[in-house]
Length: 244
Image 1 (spheres, rainbow, N blue to C red):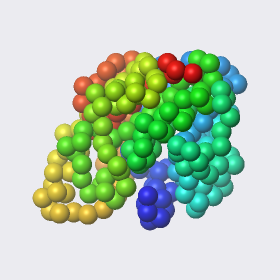
Image 2: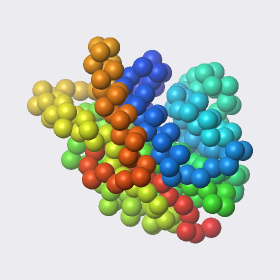
Image 3: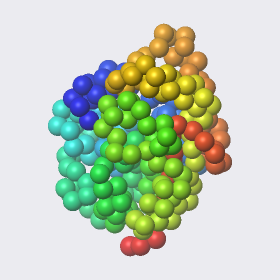
């Protein structure tokens, strides 16, 4: 991503409704779908500026990887975790069989070779380990936001499930999320196309609106970990290796 995008993320990721609510949803997905022991080893691949590391530390000891130098330095300073550099699929130095959970939170869509990236991470999972991935959904929602964030693609439930199968995983849970706000976001993206708006749609709305949007989005945590939602702005998948 562009330097400006990382700088903007660091500025807003503690307050913006999307980041705040997504962390609550990720928390519930892990609790419902990833059995972890108290001394679990966790890897966040593509940690950005580090806004998810504190969440993941609730579940175990966290390692993190981020290829962007300034973002990596900021994540290290914010969290105290010495974040590694490196790019998937071949440029990351990680031990095999180490991790009980690998999290890729809105990262896979940035990687040109998504299958190769997943294949490279598979041997890093410990026996019984699982990978949690979130990605943007619905290719027809492609907009200036995706361009600004250097997305390579958006996924459907079918293409994401097929991708994990080809990469040597069995999908245990796959669902859309950010469903309650789906009509509003579709309308906003359509308006942006009509107005030929450029850039990402990550402005923080006024505080009361930001709070309402966070509550609505975060409410999905009560069912997203146990049910399959048929539509939404994003997809989440929890999978385990079928090939060692």
